[in-house]
Structure formats: structure tokens, C-alpha cells
Image (tube, rainbow, N blue to C red; front, top):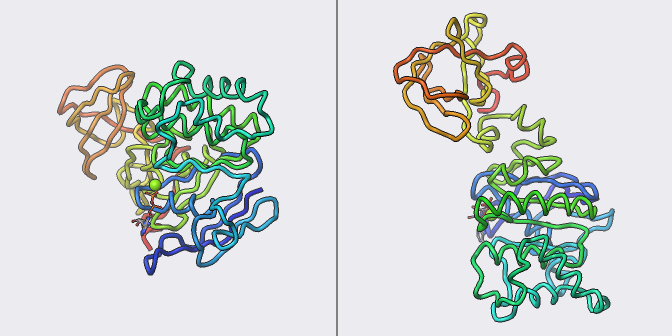
Length: 331
Ligand code: ADP
Ligand code: MG
């Protein structure tokens, strides 16, 4: 198990990480999410052993990792790290870049292992291409293949699909993450894009200004985000004062509601006038204006005429699961 305990880190006198603790079991996948500058990359660098931590400990299988003062070459051998600026050897081929990371003791199996990795990252046709001729996304895929070539026990991925186009991204996620799970490799993925990890991570740790803002199993965190910052990592979210609903007229509490969670009715509910429609493929995202400001909701079949009055409802079950004092997270 990877155990991170109360780590704190500053660049000179600029604090970047404060009191971060979490565990990752063997073969599990933890996502690190948060806005740009929240400390995701710094956290991964700290775990990899590139930083002199101010406080706290990191251990793997109960053995403490000692950091840059003790390791001649930065990083731990059982761990691989794919940084945001993956560095490859530009003048050698894709195969050579990957092969260089395979063990010298397995010379005979090199070719079949390289072929397997090329299939995994979808670059079979580029085996003999020089890396300098590849696109940014292709280079990123080579960096991934290099990192997993020797099946590390822990893999740290920093925005691993950021340079890869949408179409290839999905294919790669669905191939890579199940492969890593099958091999029992523990994974930490830093990303600001929930699509990267929602279907694959066991848990999500959310950072804000270098602190843990929320930390829960994936599905639970999505359904019970601690506050608006956390919910916003998954897209648009509404903050609805409950007293806008008849049943809760006396309430001074507001709840978070994702656009897909509103039910549209033509009888009763929160009164909203349609202001704008946005085509999203298999649904429409609709901006509405209510007494309490803008509300965003989805309509599945069609757009709605501007100025149309609609009623939005929130199920009792949802209200109960989201009930939170209005100011709980502002202190
Ligand atoms: P994220 O990956 O979530 O975008 P980072 O970990 O890269 O965030 O950065 C967190 C904070 O640390 C930011 O305020 C950033 O400006 C600062 N930072 C990152 N790298 C350095 C550095 N080498 N020197 C000084 N400050 C840095
Ligand atoms: Mg980063």
C-alpha cells in the first residue's frame, strides 16, 4: 500500500501542499483532481521523490521513501512517473524509445513486449518512425508505453491524455486503465478532466490551493460533492435555494443540483423562463432565468422556445441526499 501521511511542501516561502494524507492499495486507482495551480503536479512530484518535503512521510509497503537526499537518481525504481512534459529521445524510433526501458535480462522477449505495448497505445504502424516526426499526442502515448514497459508497481500519470485528440483519448482510456488493473499496478492520475477518470478511478481526491477539499470513492463523490468547487469538476452545477420550492418555503438552505437532475413539468415547480438553448448531440443544454437567477437544465428531445415558462422539480430523494446548510462551506 502507498501511504501518504501529512505531507507539506513549499517552493521557497510559497506554500503549495498542506497536510495531505491518503492511501492507495495495490492495484487501485486514485484520481487527483482540482483546478489549475491547485497542486496536482507538485503532489505527484513529491510522491515520486523529486522534492524535499517540509513535513510528512510517504511509504510503500510500509517502507519509507526517503526522497532526493538519499536517491542518487531521482525517483524510486518500483514507481514510474509520466510528467506533463514527457521527455523522449527524439532522434530514435518509437520502438527504440520503448525498448530502452525494458530490462536487459529479458532480451529474447523484447520484440514481443514492444509489439504488445505498441498495440496497447495504438501505434503499431509507427514502430520504426523517429519520435521527432510524431504529433504531440503520439509522443504522449510513447511516454505512456515507456512508463509501463517494465510493469512498475506504482504509476503516476500527470494529465496523461492532455495532448491526445478526443477520438483517440477514449479508445486509449478504455484500453490502458483495464490493462493496468489487470496487472495489479497502482495508479495515481492527476487531471482536471473528469472524463479521464470517472469510469476508471476507485476514488477521487480533490485539491484546492494545496489542501484536500474532498476525498471519497468516485461514485459517492460525484453524487455527494462536498461543495460547488467539487461539483464543478464534473461540469455545470446549480446552487438552488430550497425556499424556491413550495414544500421548503421556510428553509434557508441551498443544495447543489446538476442539470440532468432537474425534472421538467408543465404543472408546478420552480418557475423558469427559457433564455437560451445549446445543442449537445443527444440532449439540449438550456439556460433558464428564475427568480433566483440563472438555472441550467437539460431537455432530451428538443430545444425549447425562448421565453417559454417551464417548471423544474427536484426529487425528494435528491433533496434529502444533498441537504446542506447554505453557508457550511464558506467558513
Ligand atoms: P497543478 O498541477 O494543479 O496545475 P502545480 O502543482 O503545477 O498545480 O502548481 C501548484 C502551485 O505551485 C502553483 O501556484 C504554481 O505556480 C506553483 N509552482 C509549481 N511549480 C513551481 C516551481 N518550480 N517553482 C515555484 N512555484 C511553482
Ligand atoms: Mg499540473
